[in-house]
Length: 237
Image (cartoon, rainbow, N blue to C red; front, side, top):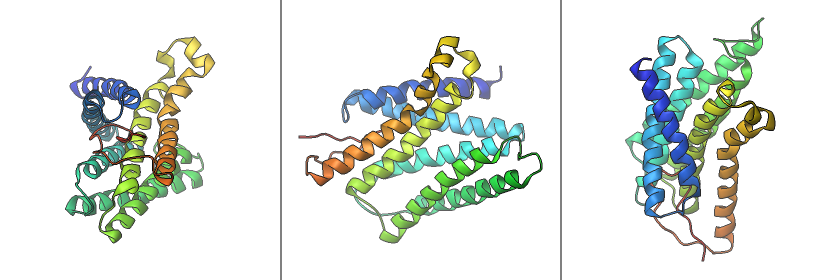
């Protein structure tokens, strides 16, 4: 086993464990913050090593997926760390990255759909269009933020939230869906692996609804966002 592969596996395992821990620990607590920071470091290592190994194997789809995940985590952290509204050079750089990714993903998806084999670089159109759609949504969000010269309040929480949860989904699906053969037959037969894979997206929907609902009824008070957690630091009265 090569060192990049070992680091990839270790960081992926740590990312999934810390992601689930941060998801269920009390928001704003010290343990939640520690788990969130472990999640961030793990996801940055996971995505960068994944892209590096995919580049060596000439797998452009996985390269773009790793870069998109890295971008999501970095921009989520920048959103959490920034005090108040405002934008910076990193926000413009992130826009350039995700705009390029969106164009590449959609181009590859179109080429796969038009190919006689229905494939492009080993993948059908679906994964390219799915990641391309996510990249387009992120691009639109970046443009809106730059036009407004920053975001705050609920919008800031939502931006941090959905980007972290998507990165969490990438890690969980890469393990539980892409490598089902490594898990017991019972987990495959009962759908447990699908539940674990899509749980980050379910948590994303839950927290977005809670953030919006809490704001509508004035039941939340602002607190600093935990740097790495895939959920916001939110509390209700």
